[in-house]
Image (spheres, protein in one colour):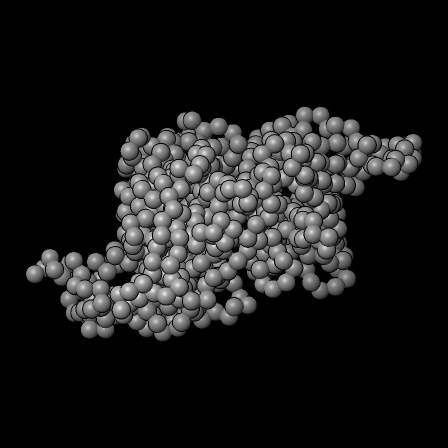
Length: 630
Ligand SMILES: [Zn+2]
Ligand SMILES: [Zn+2]
């Protein structure tokens, strides 16, 4: 009996979404396309790709067999040997036949056929799921009425900051076009199954529910704060063709969707069925990217005085050379300001690297022989400078020193600790930093303070010709920031904890003009969200990530249980987490002290801090440790 389901929903962008321009490298990971007539849409295959990835990572948590896509070729060979081959007309192995492959088409589309233990025949089938292009909903059709009257897209400017000089790194500047947060698209899916298949329906519903719970992602820029979305208004209709009469009416209909009856209880009934069959992640699960623990830290960033971020587009339109990064521009005035996820991430990375290098320096400086201190440090520097691709220069990036061809995947463990946590050009990151919008503040002219700046000629001390610029810093702005770390390890949490402590202590400044006293920021109002599918997720091979006590207030969220812990006023850590946080920090210190450059990485040639005779580089002045030693 064939069954057909029609699912419709609204895609709501929680963050801005990157648009490909249809040429050059930046189009490759972009989920949005612009048609010749200028309209924008999300191609169905971009949605399908994201949904398939999610279903693949999720299925093993529902006790379903892992897809071949998660296995190594050796593991696939082992699996093939245990299967009862029914017919084999070609090389190329057997079709996978897992529930994901039933929904989306088999990962191994070969003619060969095998038989399950229950006698069911498995042959490669085309996709049962069809996803239509998601079209832009006009602002007046938005359910939440939030779509702004501003332009549908805008251009954002990204700059890489050199770690040593704290200036814009050469050649690391890029523009990208975005649709703003809160934009909505209409999504339609059609699932056509040859025979009733409850497993496939439960898996698809569970995946869509993850999106409904706000955990959707599109495109490759999610770690930098782009491409997160949620589904609203999900509905599902079903047609069942049992008789010739059914078929006749079905084929006669103008729009087959009108033949569908609302599916009873969907999606809650199917979601409950999915939650009831959740299982612990297997030992190999982490390596296979099967879904597991995540933790999300929300906090507020309070600027104690003025905040200045550079955005040339806004600057151009508003006649200011410097202005806060503005999410929407209208010609009448600036809309709400945001700190982009990528700039927040850059600042956090830079601070995190400093923490790691300081710990390593302090540790290796203890070495008896100064020459050994240098060798040790260069061999064991835990954090490269990711934007420095000049091989041989101080802190040259892992990417530039990697002995693995760019065509091959580089595993996480070959990278330095910084690339491991924050990612590199070669490898994405499990740490996502979201765009930080203004915290319920409406900007008015009194929040802006126009100031003149004059660039000073380094030689004469006089004003540099033509180098006068205006600045429009924001006064005492407050932003809402959010970080998510997927599949954390205790040492990664330890590093994050030290970083958050520095932010809470006001040790980090943000935005341009920190030399002029701008951008001093303090993080406050911390609250933590911990998502787990089963309580076993709270631990990992390397130790405890979160105490069992977090289970107490967990509430269901899609397939996950979501626990929250609010930090007390003036504290970044929830009060009863002191003990576990100490174990994270100890794990991080051990990780830094025992870190050694992987054999696949060329050793660093030089460092910006240690010199070859074991002294600290002169331009930095004597290090505090030396001064203290007299
Ligand atoms: Zn499969
Ligand atoms: Zn690195």
